Image 1 (cartoon, rainbow, N blue to C red):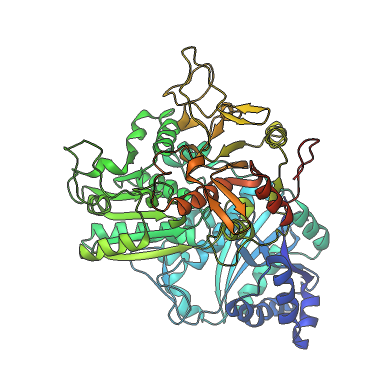
Image 2: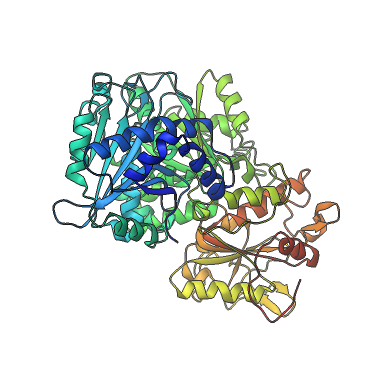
Length: 633
């Protein structure tokens, strides 16, 4: 996996293109070719209004031959950096990079008690992410995921070309006291329209055109290493430091919650925070980073989910180092009897799994109040992270509407942050869109698959071909799992601890993941199936896969969802999950289930269907097949 940019040219070449008026057309054409859709008007305006201001300074600085990468896609995500300037360091001739974030804001001021800012008149909600924190996040992700850049000099400039330096004074990092300011040193500059001379000197100090073209090609061709899995980094994040690079809305969400905590301690009005996004937009990363940063600051924060597997895995990862840290992870039904506002922050991760009440069957001691009401009441700052398309069981009622209505009924304001950028599936929103259209969860119906260089999608002709492909990826150091629809019986471990081969497809037999509460014969319990290497070889289901991620996802579509001449057809009789197959909205739950399973992969996915017609439909849509001598669709 390498990096991509919208357009590459020297500053001098861009200067020749700008007066012709063709810059907009060239970039728009490249945008459509790379992303498959037309650019938003605000992006076009930024190209036209902002790029020339940087090019002019480069020419004045004598850096006309420096390479400019326009809209460079950040590693592992679909976030794009406005401009990345590549050259050599005047000091030693080694690679040097300057990341430029352009802002067309003419007015801006700090949000009290936070690292956020207000930019009136600019599209989008206020308060918003500080532009210095935004560009600093780009620097972090480049260092973390492009090994070539770990020793290179990376500087950042926020080009506020419509605002004067006086306007920017209140939001300068040293004035607003940004938390990362001590790390930033002189690596980040926030410059206004009258800072042209500082801009020029900063570029001259950072860049020389020598070997610029060579270094630019090296950067674009440099491998991007896979991200450290969520669970493998959790304990470090909770105990020691931030380990996940937060970008754009992710960082904004964390900064907003921290601001609400500060205000609540000063007697500010209670507020519910909703963080909403699809698969791979970083909800769980935000949750873990929040928990770690708040705990390190002495804030009483607890992470809660409705998933036994997810919570148990978090507890095991942290508890292996510090058993007391396990107390920071709870379940939604643990808050029925808590004292109101006893916590500073409750982080309700996967809040789409909130249930109607915390009452269990025949448990008369549990409260019958709405569970969402209990969660809101439990903390001064309740935070809900959710994806409404991940409702996969009857009784799960978590939604934006439910949380908003409950908060309003309790007299509490709700603030919503929408996560738009993709951090899973190779930072490939095209794949997520394709899956959602394929399953009828987004308008447009099934679409032909257009291969991309950031995410591998294949069609397996047999489950053994899928397994062999994924095993090879495991040998290469990647993580991989196979998950399936709940279409086969699920046996408990035998008396000797071995697992029955319940999942049977032709001459291929494999067990479901273990139902045992502990490791037996080297086989992990279900809560660790997605994160323990020994989980490969067993088949996971929605309950063991949801909330987790691995590099490559194998997905077996069973007979409970097949493609017919009339479109998708759900079959209750083929589904073995008694909690689902009698549900009123069975068809919706099954489509949501396969959407979740198909979006667990960070780098790729392999699809297989037990139904011949469904497999043929995948092939007609252009999903490339894995080589196999066996069954052909």
